[in-house]
Image (cartoon, rainbow, N blue to C red; front, side):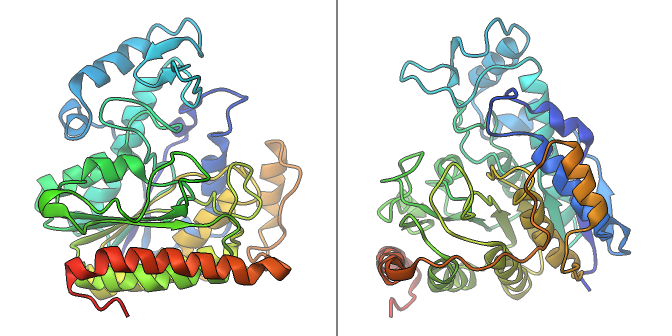
Length: 394
């Protein structure tokens, strides 16, 4: 059994809310916590549920520009139209982007999101827990001086900066969201102490349009920015093969003090905002893989955040509960608990999977083509990155 696992949560996280028409609905994380509770995960002797705290100004400034923080706080207290152009990526941008509408309390709720990530990181780094689970986090698109992709402040970047500032020599950040983890990559693009690995749908097809194999880091950090740009309709088998070809050899070579994972589940076959074809089978497999990597190469230290995921009730709670159960070394029931199904229906859910395990997605005649394209993407990344680390491309 894992010696200690911390979950970080407060119902106050539902305040991070862009409005009823926005795809990032905060109820998805509350339903996740309720599913974990219905499965008895918080009753386990090795699990502790902790509240977050607010990140301090100094902690936020370890990544974000002071003038940006000032702007968000000012806008947060004077919202006169959600989609007005406030600048800084908030409201409607000159390019017509409306990902981050303004809302009252935006600064305060974002500070609390970052503070939760700091609690999750500190519990692991101080040795009070081996693993931490933080489903409200993973806002990986925010840049130092602008909001982007539903993200106001970048909680992974802030937490990793805290780890570095408190003695961590190396952090491996692995991002399995369907969208490229561009904000975290940008934060540490020239810092050799952080390896960022992102497996995502190619930017040729999907926001944010970045994350190609030739983005390898800068200066002394060349080779520590790792991107696997996978094709649309990537299936379980194709994804697992790409992950195995890239992640374990690099984590083994890098030997991080902490494994930090962003667990976006918008890779699911039914997600409305992207084009992958994964199922919960792969989330269970990834959970096991990360658990092994943490114990084999990071002294057991594993910080896990949420991320994207827009099948609000049917996929997100099952996906992130699978990860949490693996951290806690708990067996989940085959079926989703009926009491949780009732809670989800009370929040408007109409289609809910009865089981944690999805059926596999079949692509028929297109399967071989997708597998080949995914394999080529992994090969391109290996050829770009492995020589920096003395690893055979194979």
